[in-house]
Length: 80
Image 1 (tube, helix red, strand yellow):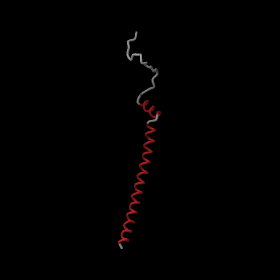
Image 2: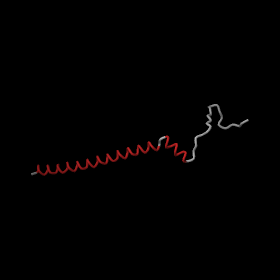
Image 3: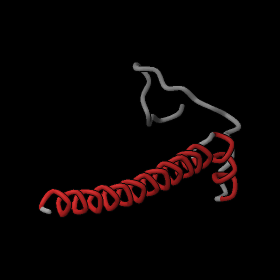
Image 4: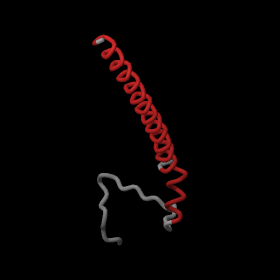
C-alpha cells in the first residue's frame, strides 16, 4: 500500500516537474527571441548610415575644410 502511494506521488511530481520544465523552456525561447530582436535593433541604430542620417537631421554637415594641427603648431595664434 505504501509503495502504491509513493508511486502515485512520484508520478504526480514527475508530471508537475515536466510542466514546469516546459514553461521554463518557453520563457527561455521568448527571452532568446527578444535578445535577438534587441541586438538587431542595436546594430541598426548604431550603423554608420543611420548615424549619418540622424546627424544630418540635427543640422550637422560634413566639413568643407579640414585643418590638422601638428604637435609643434599652436591652437590659437596671432596672424600677421
